[in-house]
Amino acid sequence: MRSVMAVTMTVDEFASKAGVSNEHVLHLVDLGLLPEHDWDDRLVSRIRFIVQIEESGIQPAVLAQALRSSELDIEQLDAALARPHRVVMLDQSLADLVATLGLSDALVTDVRLALGERASDDEASVREDDALLLGVLAELVELGVPEPVALRMFRNTADSLRRVAVSASEMWEEGVRQPLVDSGTSYGEILGAQNRNGARFQELGDRLVQLLWNRYLDDAIFSGTMVLLERALGEVGVEWDRALVPPAVAFVDLTAFTHRTGTRGEGAIATDVDQFSNLVRRTVALHHGTIVKMLGDGAMLHFKQPADAVRCGLALVATTDTTALPRARVGVNAGPMIVRDVDYFGDTVNIAARVVDYARPGEVLVTQEVVDAMGDTDVAFSEVGEVSLKGVDGLVHLFVAAAG
View 1 (cartoon, rainbow, N blue to C red):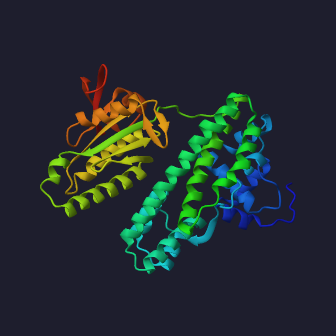
View 2 (cartoon, one colour):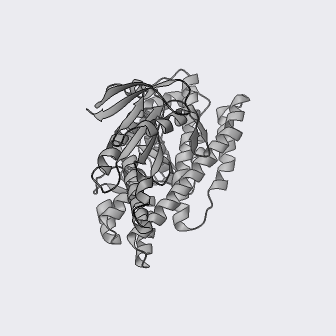
View 3 (cartoon, rainbow, N blue to C red):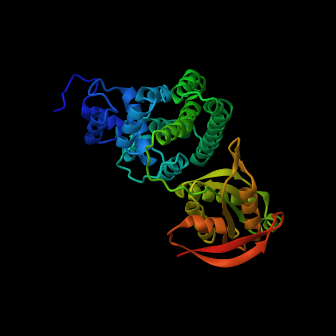
């Protein structure tokens, strides 16, 4: 029988703050991933990290087995994620928070989509940092800033800081972590080096900037730590199911937009660009993608799963068809890419850019590589055949995608 000792928090308090059930907490105790007592905010961060690992496909029992069999331990992972910013859940629903702040539902929805929050349960507990972010926006509105302007400020800050954090992680990986791996340095020592230097990234300015920096840097640190954890799992022979598919890049643009600019005033064109940008942002967020860059009347998009890229393209085309905007067209390709400063390069990207040029208005045109990576899907493909694309060596096999 599990012994019960004096704790910093009760199991109810601890589970509520971590956003999990009491049973989940006790299961992690049984696995040795949590102590039986002295639960505090540091351990709340540990649970949140374990939940993220679960969402990546690694069950807690597998994690516990790997930690018992490798040079990594749970305390090292704690240290890698030990930051002043800790994700905790408040004893308050999103609906209650929004009512208190007086913000519109539309603004809150757009903020949550920009943050990658796709759950729509207004009665669910709200993250503490999300509550603080919405509080900052409420104060901006109280100062007289219109909600659309406050949203633009938020998005620009969020996009910029996300790019900075991911870029910093990439440079750390390229300049520090990978050379240490190549030199035979142990994973524990690598985490130690990361821990000693992580504090340099923790001190940035104002409330909104600080909160956003914390959020996206947390994502980057988690991603880098997952690389080490997956390598450790592989080296000790622990396996888990994970489908290996190439990432996808998509280009979307509005047909005949250049001609349109010559027949409309600057104000109308600016409105079109803003409408298109908002449409792309919402649709990409709902399909688990990221915007690499906006290109005025077009955009470059990245997806971990080619199926998400195709479905997003179909949604973009369908949505623009319901607006006064010119019809959209989309080109999608899948395969290896060169990553540099949060941008993507290489043949995969170049071919995707040429595919969208070949597409007709309202078409989502994809390569053979995308079709091969789709598996069982609700998307139908009509073969176009092998075509010659400008600037691309050889023929490219293309298909038109359509909702099945």
